[in-house]
Length: 396
Image 1 (cartoon, one colour):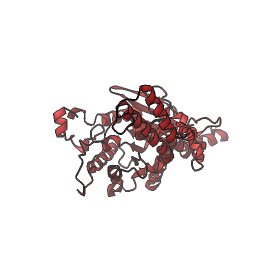
Image 2: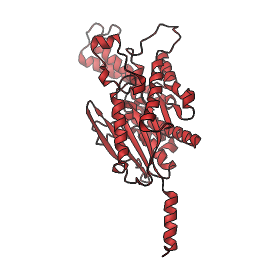
Image 3: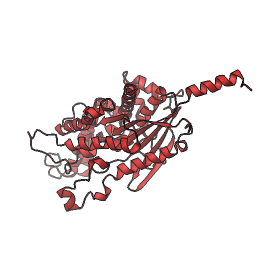
Protein backbone atom coordinates (compact mmCIF):
# COMPACT_ATOMS: atom_id res chain seq x y z
CA UNK A 1 0.00 0.00 0.00
CA UNK A 2 1.37 3.36 -0.99
CA UNK A 3 1.72 5.96 1.83
CA UNK A 4 -0.47 9.08 1.56
CA UNK A 5 1.07 11.94 -0.40
CA UNK A 6 1.17 14.19 2.67
CA UNK A 7 3.18 11.62 4.61
CA UNK A 8 5.63 11.25 1.72
CA UNK A 9 6.12 15.02 1.64
CA UNK A 10 6.80 15.11 5.40
CA UNK A 11 9.24 12.20 5.20
CA UNK A 12 11.04 13.77 2.25
CA UNK A 13 11.31 17.08 4.09
CA UNK A 14 12.69 15.35 7.20
CA UNK A 15 15.30 13.45 5.17
CA UNK A 16 16.33 16.63 3.38
CA UNK A 17 16.72 18.65 6.58
CA UNK A 18 18.21 16.04 8.93
CA UNK A 19 21.77 17.03 9.83
CA UNK A 20 24.54 15.49 11.89
CA UNK A 21 25.17 17.13 15.24
CA UNK A 22 27.86 19.81 14.90
CA UNK A 23 30.34 19.61 17.78
CA UNK A 24 32.68 22.44 18.75
CA UNK A 25 35.31 22.06 21.48
CA UNK A 26 36.40 25.13 23.48
CA UNK A 27 39.48 24.79 25.69
CA UNK A 28 41.81 27.02 27.69
CA UNK A 29 42.41 28.74 31.00
CA UNK A 30 40.68 31.54 32.92
CA UNK A 31 39.72 33.65 29.91
CA UNK A 32 38.12 30.65 28.25
CA UNK A 33 36.29 30.15 31.54
CA UNK A 34 35.13 33.74 31.15
CA UNK A 35 34.98 36.36 33.90
CA UNK A 36 32.50 38.86 32.46
CA UNK A 37 29.55 39.30 34.75
CA UNK A 38 26.14 39.22 33.07
CA UNK A 39 25.44 42.69 34.49
CA UNK A 40 27.99 44.15 32.05
CA UNK A 41 26.14 42.95 28.95
CA UNK A 42 24.04 46.12 28.60
CA UNK A 43 27.25 48.15 28.21
CA UNK A 44 27.60 46.58 24.75
CA UNK A 45 24.73 48.77 23.57
CA UNK A 46 26.47 52.02 24.56
CA UNK A 47 28.71 51.81 21.50
CA UNK A 48 26.88 52.29 18.16
CA UNK A 49 29.40 49.91 16.57
CA UNK A 50 28.43 47.05 18.90
CA UNK A 51 24.75 47.88 19.51
CA UNK A 52 23.74 45.36 16.78
CA UNK A 53 25.75 42.72 18.64
CA UNK A 54 23.72 43.36 21.77
CA UNK A 55 20.50 42.91 19.79
CA UNK A 56 21.74 39.52 18.60
CA UNK A 57 22.33 38.53 22.22
CA UNK A 58 18.87 39.45 23.49
CA UNK A 59 15.63 37.55 23.28
CA UNK A 60 12.15 38.98 22.54
CA UNK A 61 11.80 39.87 26.22
CA UNK A 62 14.90 42.06 26.12
CA UNK A 63 16.88 39.68 28.34
CA UNK A 64 19.95 37.63 27.33
CA UNK A 65 18.74 34.91 24.99
CA UNK A 66 18.82 31.16 25.40
CA UNK A 67 19.99 29.43 22.22
CA UNK A 68 17.27 27.60 20.30
CA UNK A 69 19.34 24.70 19.05
CA UNK A 70 22.64 24.76 20.97
CA UNK A 71 23.56 22.71 24.03
CA UNK A 72 26.72 22.84 26.13
CA UNK A 73 28.73 20.53 28.37
CA UNK A 74 31.16 22.48 30.55
CA UNK A 75 33.88 20.68 32.50
CA UNK A 76 35.78 22.75 35.06
CA UNK A 77 36.73 22.93 38.72
CA UNK A 78 39.61 23.59 41.08
CA UNK A 79 42.17 21.10 42.34
CA UNK A 80 40.67 17.66 41.98
CA UNK A 81 37.11 18.95 42.42
CA UNK A 82 36.17 18.92 38.76
CA UNK A 83 32.63 18.55 37.56
CA UNK A 84 30.26 19.12 34.68
CA UNK A 85 27.45 21.54 34.04
CA UNK A 86 25.29 21.03 30.98
CA UNK A 87 22.09 22.15 29.30
CA UNK A 88 20.78 24.59 26.71
CA UNK A 89 23.29 27.34 26.02
CA UNK A 90 22.51 30.55 27.88
CA UNK A 91 24.39 32.95 30.13
CA UNK A 92 26.06 31.56 33.25
CA UNK A 93 28.45 29.17 31.50
CA UNK A 94 31.40 31.43 32.23
CA UNK A 95 33.62 30.90 35.27
CA UNK A 96 31.86 28.72 37.84
CA UNK A 97 32.94 28.18 41.47
CA UNK A 98 30.57 25.21 41.41
CA UNK A 99 30.76 23.47 38.00
CA UNK A 100 27.10 22.45 38.22
CA UNK A 101 25.67 25.91 38.98
CA UNK A 102 25.18 29.14 37.04
CA UNK A 103 28.17 31.34 37.82
CA UNK A 104 26.59 34.61 36.69
CA UNK A 105 29.28 35.15 34.05
CA UNK A 106 29.93 34.60 30.36
CA UNK A 107 33.00 33.70 28.36
CA UNK A 108 33.41 33.50 24.58
CA UNK A 109 31.19 30.39 24.47
CA UNK A 110 28.00 32.46 24.72
CA UNK A 111 28.19 34.53 21.53
CA UNK A 112 30.10 31.75 19.77
CA UNK A 113 27.16 29.43 20.38
CA UNK A 114 24.56 32.06 19.46
CA UNK A 115 26.43 32.69 16.19
CA UNK A 116 26.42 28.98 15.40
CA UNK A 117 22.74 28.86 16.31
CA UNK A 118 22.06 31.44 13.61
CA UNK A 119 24.38 29.84 11.04
CA UNK A 120 23.78 26.10 11.41
CA UNK A 121 20.54 24.47 10.36
CA UNK A 122 20.98 21.50 12.68
CA UNK A 123 21.68 20.89 16.35
CA UNK A 124 24.94 22.17 17.87
CA UNK A 125 26.88 20.91 20.86
CA UNK A 126 29.61 22.88 22.60
CA UNK A 127 32.06 20.95 24.76
CA UNK A 128 33.97 23.35 26.96
CA UNK A 129 36.87 22.45 29.27
CA UNK A 130 38.69 25.26 31.04
CA UNK A 131 40.62 25.85 34.24
CA UNK A 132 42.20 29.05 35.53
CA UNK A 133 45.95 29.42 35.95
CA UNK A 134 47.10 26.66 33.60
CA UNK A 135 50.08 26.67 31.25
CA UNK A 136 50.52 25.02 27.87
CA UNK A 137 54.14 24.10 28.52
CA UNK A 138 53.21 21.95 31.55
CA UNK A 139 49.49 21.61 32.42
CA UNK A 140 48.18 21.19 28.87
CA UNK A 141 51.38 19.61 27.52
CA UNK A 142 50.42 17.09 24.86
CA UNK A 143 52.20 13.79 24.06
CA UNK A 144 54.21 14.79 20.98
CA UNK A 145 55.65 17.83 22.80
CA UNK A 146 57.80 15.27 24.61
CA UNK A 147 58.56 14.96 28.34
CA UNK A 148 58.50 18.20 30.28
CA UNK A 149 62.12 19.42 30.63
CA UNK A 150 62.37 20.20 34.33
CA UNK A 151 64.49 23.28 34.97
CA UNK A 152 67.11 23.86 37.63
CA UNK A 153 64.50 25.75 39.67
CA UNK A 154 62.00 22.90 39.27
CA UNK A 155 64.53 20.45 40.66
CA UNK A 156 65.63 22.70 43.51
CA UNK A 157 62.07 23.48 44.63
CA UNK A 158 60.56 20.14 43.61
CA UNK A 159 58.13 21.79 41.20
CA UNK A 160 56.47 20.33 38.11
CA UNK A 161 56.73 16.58 38.72
CA UNK A 162 56.93 14.70 35.44
CA UNK A 163 53.93 12.53 36.26
CA UNK A 164 51.61 15.55 36.29
CA UNK A 165 52.78 17.09 33.02
CA UNK A 166 49.86 17.14 30.58
CA UNK A 167 47.33 16.39 33.32
CA UNK A 168 44.82 18.92 31.98
CA UNK A 169 45.31 17.81 28.40
CA UNK A 170 44.27 14.34 29.49
CA UNK A 171 41.34 15.63 31.55
CA UNK A 172 40.10 17.65 28.58
CA UNK A 173 40.47 14.78 26.16
CA UNK A 174 38.76 12.29 28.47
CA UNK A 175 35.80 14.63 28.92
CA UNK A 176 35.38 15.22 25.19
CA UNK A 177 35.41 11.48 24.54
CA UNK A 178 32.99 10.84 27.40
CA UNK A 179 30.47 13.34 26.02
CA UNK A 180 30.81 12.02 22.47
CA UNK A 181 30.24 8.45 23.65
CA UNK A 182 26.64 9.47 24.37
CA UNK A 183 25.85 12.91 22.92
CA UNK A 184 22.15 12.48 23.62
CA UNK A 185 22.79 12.75 27.37
CA UNK A 186 23.66 16.42 26.90
CA UNK A 187 21.89 17.21 23.63
CA UNK A 188 18.34 15.79 23.39
CA UNK A 189 18.19 16.80 19.71
CA UNK A 190 20.96 14.35 18.85
CA UNK A 191 19.93 11.75 16.27
CA UNK A 192 22.12 8.66 16.45
CA UNK A 193 21.22 7.81 12.84
CA UNK A 194 22.71 11.11 11.67
CA UNK A 195 25.67 10.95 14.05
CA UNK A 196 27.91 13.90 14.84
CA UNK A 197 30.64 15.90 13.16
CA UNK A 198 33.61 17.45 14.96
CA UNK A 199 33.38 20.90 13.41
CA UNK A 200 35.91 23.08 15.23
CA UNK A 201 38.30 23.54 18.15
CA UNK A 202 38.93 26.89 19.88
CA UNK A 203 41.99 27.50 22.07
CA UNK A 204 42.07 30.58 24.34
CA UNK A 205 44.97 30.51 26.79
CA UNK A 206 48.33 32.11 27.34
CA UNK A 207 48.63 34.32 30.39
CA UNK A 208 50.42 31.74 32.55
CA UNK A 209 52.98 31.10 29.82
CA UNK A 210 53.44 34.84 29.24
CA UNK A 211 54.51 35.43 32.86
CA UNK A 212 56.53 32.20 33.22
CA UNK A 213 60.22 33.15 33.48
CA UNK A 214 61.10 29.67 34.67
CA UNK A 215 60.27 27.83 31.45
CA UNK A 216 60.86 30.87 29.20
CA UNK A 217 63.91 32.57 30.80
CA UNK A 218 64.53 36.21 30.00
CA UNK A 219 67.20 36.86 27.39
CA UNK A 220 69.68 39.70 27.10
CA UNK A 221 68.64 42.58 24.87
CA UNK A 222 69.64 42.07 21.27
CA UNK A 223 69.61 38.26 21.56
CA UNK A 224 67.63 38.16 18.33
CA UNK A 225 65.43 35.20 19.28
CA UNK A 226 61.92 35.03 20.66
CA UNK A 227 62.14 33.74 24.24
CA UNK A 228 58.67 32.23 23.74
CA UNK A 229 59.66 30.10 20.74
CA UNK A 230 58.95 26.94 22.72
CA UNK A 231 55.33 28.04 23.06
CA UNK A 232 55.00 27.81 19.27
CA UNK A 233 56.45 24.30 19.39
CA UNK A 234 54.15 23.19 22.20
CA UNK A 235 51.08 24.62 20.47
CA UNK A 236 51.99 22.97 17.16
CA UNK A 237 52.25 19.64 18.98
CA UNK A 238 48.96 20.34 20.81
CA UNK A 239 47.06 20.95 17.56
CA UNK A 240 48.43 17.79 15.95
CA UNK A 241 47.76 15.68 19.04
CA UNK A 242 44.20 16.94 19.48
CA UNK A 243 43.42 16.02 15.89
CA UNK A 244 45.05 12.62 16.22
CA UNK A 245 43.42 11.77 19.55
CA UNK A 246 39.98 12.86 18.34
CA UNK A 247 40.35 11.21 14.93
CA UNK A 248 39.84 14.48 13.03
CA UNK A 249 42.98 15.19 10.95
CA UNK A 250 41.74 18.47 9.45
CA UNK A 251 39.69 19.72 12.39
CA UNK A 252 39.38 23.53 12.03
CA UNK A 253 41.45 25.02 14.85
CA UNK A 254 41.20 28.60 16.13
CA UNK A 255 43.99 30.16 18.19
CA UNK A 256 42.63 33.01 20.29
CA UNK A 257 45.78 35.12 20.56
CA UNK A 258 46.16 36.72 24.00
CA UNK A 259 45.05 40.36 23.77
CA UNK A 260 45.26 41.63 27.34
CA UNK A 261 46.53 45.21 27.25
CA UNK A 262 45.11 45.98 23.82
CA UNK A 263 46.93 47.00 20.68
CA UNK A 264 49.61 48.89 22.60
CA UNK A 265 50.33 46.81 25.71
CA UNK A 266 53.58 48.63 26.45
CA UNK A 267 55.52 45.39 26.82
CA UNK A 268 57.91 43.85 24.33
CA UNK A 269 57.39 40.48 26.02
CA UNK A 270 53.65 40.66 25.38
CA UNK A 271 54.19 41.40 21.69
CA UNK A 272 56.77 38.61 21.42
CA UNK A 273 54.39 36.20 23.08
CA UNK A 274 51.55 37.08 20.74
CA UNK A 275 53.87 36.46 17.79
CA UNK A 276 54.82 33.03 19.16
CA UNK A 277 51.21 32.15 19.87
CA UNK A 278 50.06 33.01 16.35
CA UNK A 279 53.00 31.38 14.56
CA UNK A 280 51.57 27.84 14.12
CA UNK A 281 48.81 29.27 11.91
CA UNK A 282 51.48 30.23 9.35
CA UNK A 283 52.87 26.70 8.99
CA UNK A 284 52.26 25.12 5.55
CA UNK A 285 50.75 21.98 7.13
CA UNK A 286 48.13 24.13 8.85
CA UNK A 287 47.19 26.26 5.84
CA UNK A 288 43.44 26.93 5.75
CA UNK A 289 42.75 24.72 8.77
CA UNK A 290 44.35 26.76 11.59
CA UNK A 291 43.59 30.45 12.06
CA UNK A 292 44.98 32.87 14.63
CA UNK A 293 42.41 35.41 15.81
CA UNK A 294 43.93 38.49 17.43
CA UNK A 295 41.86 39.45 20.49
CA UNK A 296 43.76 42.68 21.26
CA UNK A 297 41.37 44.75 19.06
CA UNK A 298 38.53 43.76 21.39
CA UNK A 299 40.24 45.22 24.46
CA UNK A 300 38.17 48.14 25.80
CA UNK A 301 40.53 51.12 25.85
CA UNK A 302 38.03 53.45 27.53
CA UNK A 303 37.45 51.13 30.47
CA UNK A 304 41.16 50.34 30.63
CA UNK A 305 42.04 54.03 31.06
CA UNK A 306 39.67 54.30 34.02
CA UNK A 307 40.92 51.03 35.48
CA UNK A 308 44.47 52.38 35.33
CA UNK A 309 43.35 55.25 37.52
CA UNK A 310 41.76 52.78 39.95
CA UNK A 311 45.09 50.98 40.08
CA UNK A 312 46.80 54.25 40.96
CA UNK A 313 44.38 54.63 43.87
CA UNK A 314 45.16 51.12 45.08
CA UNK A 315 48.87 51.84 44.82
CA UNK A 316 48.46 55.02 46.83
CA UNK A 317 46.53 53.12 49.52
CA UNK A 318 49.43 50.69 49.71
CA UNK A 319 51.99 53.50 49.92
CA UNK A 320 50.08 55.24 52.69
CA UNK A 321 49.71 52.09 54.74
CA UNK A 322 53.33 51.05 54.29
CA UNK A 323 54.83 54.55 54.70
CA UNK A 324 56.21 54.69 51.18
CA UNK A 325 59.03 57.17 50.91
CA UNK A 326 57.24 59.12 48.17
CA UNK A 327 53.84 59.10 49.89
CA UNK A 328 52.35 61.81 52.14
CA UNK A 329 52.71 59.34 54.98
CA UNK A 330 56.45 58.77 54.56
CA UNK A 331 57.06 59.93 58.13
CA UNK A 332 54.24 57.73 59.47
CA UNK A 333 52.46 60.64 61.16
CA UNK A 334 49.11 60.24 59.36
CA UNK A 335 46.34 58.64 61.39
CA UNK A 336 44.18 55.93 59.83
CA UNK A 337 41.32 58.42 59.42
CA UNK A 338 43.63 60.95 57.77
CA UNK A 339 44.80 58.28 55.34
CA UNK A 340 41.19 57.47 54.43
CA UNK A 341 40.37 61.14 53.90
CA UNK A 342 43.47 61.70 51.77
CA UNK A 343 42.72 58.59 49.68
CA UNK A 344 39.12 59.64 49.13
CA UNK A 345 40.20 63.08 47.90
CA UNK A 346 42.94 61.54 45.77
CA UNK A 347 40.45 59.23 44.05
CA UNK A 348 37.92 62.05 43.52
CA UNK A 349 40.58 64.11 41.69
CA UNK A 350 41.56 61.16 39.48
CA UNK A 351 38.20 59.62 38.68
CA UNK A 352 35.02 61.53 37.90
CA UNK A 353 31.60 60.20 39.01
CA UNK A 354 30.80 59.55 35.33
CA UNK A 355 33.96 57.48 34.89
CA UNK A 356 33.25 55.51 38.05
CA UNK A 357 29.73 54.75 36.84
CA UNK A 358 31.02 53.72 33.40
CA UNK A 359 33.60 51.35 34.89
CA UNK A 360 30.96 49.74 37.09
CA UNK A 361 28.66 49.36 34.08
CA UNK A 362 31.22 47.78 31.76
CA UNK A 363 33.89 46.04 33.84
CA UNK A 364 33.71 43.34 36.49
CA UNK A 365 37.24 41.92 36.87
CA UNK A 366 40.95 42.64 36.50
CA UNK A 367 42.90 43.46 33.37
CA UNK A 368 44.29 39.93 33.13
CA UNK A 369 40.67 38.83 32.60
CA UNK A 370 40.00 41.45 29.90
CA UNK A 371 38.51 43.63 32.65
CA UNK A 372 35.61 41.18 32.98
CA UNK A 373 33.97 43.09 30.14
CA UNK A 374 31.11 41.29 28.39
CA UNK A 375 31.62 43.44 25.31
CA UNK A 376 35.13 42.06 24.88
CA UNK A 377 34.13 38.42 25.41
CA UNK A 378 31.12 38.79 23.11
CA UNK A 379 33.28 40.18 20.30
CA UNK A 380 35.78 37.34 20.79
CA UNK A 381 33.07 34.70 20.61
CA UNK A 382 31.70 36.02 17.34
CA UNK A 383 35.21 36.35 15.86
CA UNK A 384 35.98 32.74 16.76
CA UNK A 385 32.74 31.62 15.12
CA UNK A 386 33.57 33.59 11.96
CA UNK A 387 37.02 31.97 11.83
CA UNK A 388 35.59 28.45 12.13
CA UNK A 389 33.02 29.12 9.42
CA UNK A 390 35.73 30.54 7.16
CA UNK A 391 37.82 27.39 7.51
CA UNK A 392 34.84 25.11 7.01
CA UNK A 393 33.86 26.97 3.84
CA UNK A 394 37.42 26.73 2.50
CA UNK A 395 37.58 23.01 3.26
CA UNK A 396 34.29 22.34 1.52
